[in-house]
Length: 454
Ligand SMILES: *Cc1c(COP(=O)(O)O)cnc(C)c1O
Image (cartoon, rainbow, N blue to C red; front, side, top):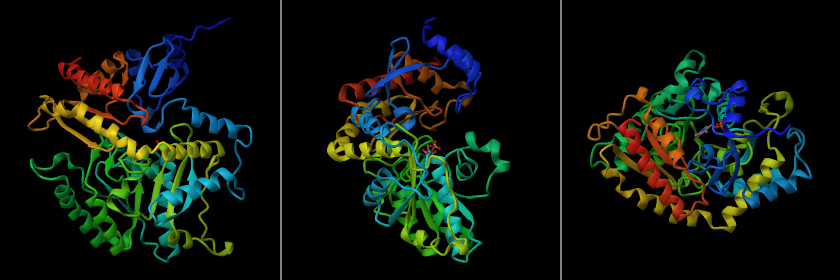
């Protein structure tokens, strides 16, 4: 018997057996999941042959398009040699060479790579490492984390504890660590005429106060450098990171840079921290690290942190954390192919042209009566849809207008997935001029459609 795999067949079978991430499953009664059959470059194609421009890089992971021939080849080559080996007591060439490359590429203080297989786990590792470092140094009281309002660091309980997005966090409050939350440097609410730099500086005063008063009980500050991704792509000025680095040094507190979303060129530099000329003590990478192919994450740390764990086994100071698929060779080869493309194609430089095209094709959007801001940092551009422009009052969230915009954009063949009423682009770097124009045109039409109420 030949089964016809159409969108509706698959959607039907799906809803019998699956439970999807970040989804109220009842929504699928009205909006069945879209069954994707294949991808090529910036395009995804469903089982009915309809194509969608992947303007959000499949949840921000894809860098060089779907079915990229160079990444495909690298994984295929590795597949015939070694698919997986445990990384405890064993090693392999792809992970050794990847670590050498990441250490060379990253801010200079970062000298060691610890691997896991997703972003949330990288954050868990960073948190455990920081706490454990201070414990090994005879400072067991340093066990609290400082995060930023509106920050996002993943969904596992430790990572969720340092998040500040109520939609994901509030329900699980009783299970979470007690963290200290500093106001966000996010510039959306700055005064009219105030510069990003001035606003981010002003927001730092509270962080400074927290560190100066409570540093004895604080092990680390965790931030998403420059762009708060899941916090509606809010953005801030690099000065905040510069000031934070100084304060963390002054008060003996680790700085954890969560570059899971911002890393690998998203903000216009390889890592966002470069724009503030700082080295964090710990840096988390995932998402784009494999070009969006396979799960992999890395926690880079300073030699100082590494040395605090290094002793005779019987001292029991080692970092005994592990995950089964840590440093998977296939994922490492995908990462190599990704880094090769960065080198061979001069990606960071060429992205400046793409970022400029994103800017010019959306330049007039701020004149729209329901768009309160268009903001951009490198290859990330966000458009804020509001009910009332002067007051920035949002539409009631229950109206789900962003969702209406999403539906409309999909009909037009563009995958935009607004967070609330924030529309954003975070496209693969292989997008071309015509595709950027299409993405921008459809975004504006989708906002018009959503404003009208769908
Ligand atoms: C996506 C994300 C995470 C979580 O990564 P997962 O692989 O989804 O667990 C953590 N931090 C930031 C900044 C992210 O954008």
